[in-house]
Length: 256
Image (tube, rainbow, N blue to C red; front, side, top):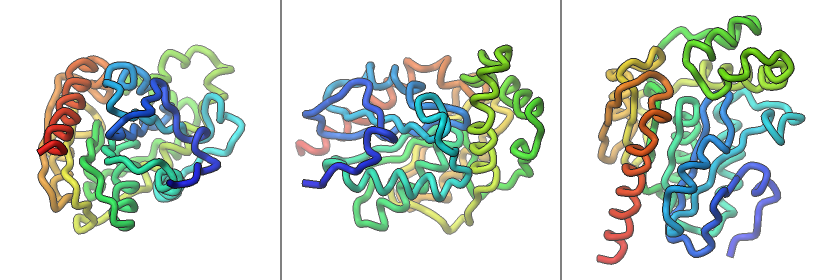
């Protein structure tokens, strides 16, 4: 049995512990996001699923830590902790920046010889698509304007100067991480990828989300929802059903 990693409880949050789980869902937040964003998922899925939400440094109870501004470094940390978890078939769900982090952690896991079951990438264009994104170079007001445009989970704090000063370093680091991240079309995982996207997302077109198909040698599927960058908050019930169906199928395959 693997020994606990010292960063386990710091990075990995379980809002509904499932000691007898037979599968694991690793949830990776968006830029400026935090682990509690995925609390409803943990509450909705059954005890068969170990729902783990990642808490990046630099926010909430980790606000005194220096934020990490490189996707590869985030992925290295998460992969290192994941390797010490009790072995379960793992599925990744990443939204926006979290989609890229999930992709990189999945690559590292496959390099260890442990293939993930599936990678769900939500609200993020494929990493081989190119855009000139420079939000991380803006002043504080510019970053706040971007958050307001996307209607993210931090937008409710925009009127609170003290709270915004607390979250801005993490936001800037997150934007630097995702805006400086890219890879070639040849960079791929072998596990299936499912892309979820909003039809009015200013940061990801349907074509850019479909380009994730180039990054897997497995099967690919895409589901398009009405809405913008945070379409998943408006369609939480539907997305939870997609995840529940995924785990039901996984259990069915395991019993064959």
